[in-house]
Length: 351
Image (cartoon, rainbow, N blue to C red; front, side, top):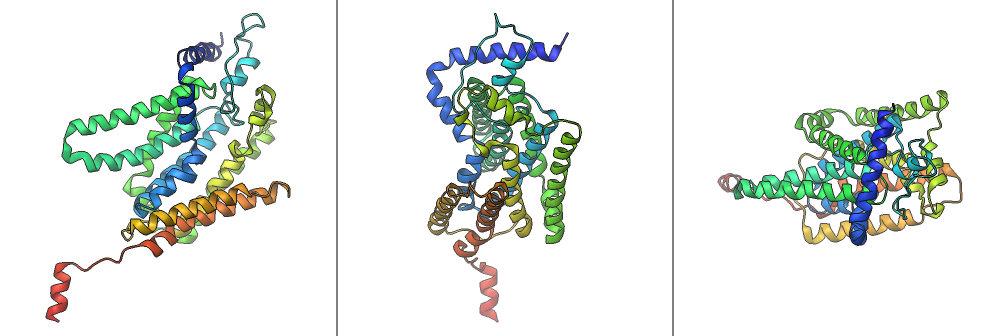
């Protein structure tokens, strides 16, 4: 007996149940699914943090980038189906009892399903933000901390429901994404890792980026040598998506790797920012907003008719330049000059 197939069959019924119960809340679930899309988080919410604190942005960027790389690697290794095409390919159902799950433009993602990228990235992102908030609320007692954690896990539950509702993920893929996201966050937020990266020379950090890319490239070619098409998920999505126009190249694993590599290379060039000037919010926030607008415009005008190499190279450069800008230009132009302490002022007077 195929126990895994039996499990996925039960999880299909769970998806049907979620789609039935939450059908009246579809608009809300669509907003949640779009808001916590890894690409959208990377282009909107995370840059806003750069306008508030360069230190926090550096920590958040490292956590999210390594988490997304880990997600890409695990997706390729596990090579697990998404519900909307597994349902039509499996022998667990016959033509007489095969159900049909609801699809829309959010359903058709052309990448393997396990672990959920939405859950894994959102878990890491929210873990960093809520860790900072938790430190700020410690003086208010345990009740405030408990309330904050309830909000954290409730948000993850809502994202999971939204991903199941649109048939993007099975339940176990959402749970696995949350667990891996928490694990990656704890690793990335450890002071040892940050200090270790900061101690390395720029050349070594860049070499580390090359190593990560080499590992992913090796996984890609090992699959091809084994007779496995690394782009099999794209073909399955085209085959079983109700409307092929729902599919977007920005949701493929190859595009994600290019986007992540551009940003991670910028991080490697600058290095982890452990100490930075306080930012003049009145200047840094408008600056970040303007940069975000230029980044969106730049990506909107990505050359799509000059071949794959030009397309990916342009994407790589855009993410490199703007990530570098958030790390270097924002604190350089909007940083507050540190004022000398009383002791330093008194010493200068005596001298």
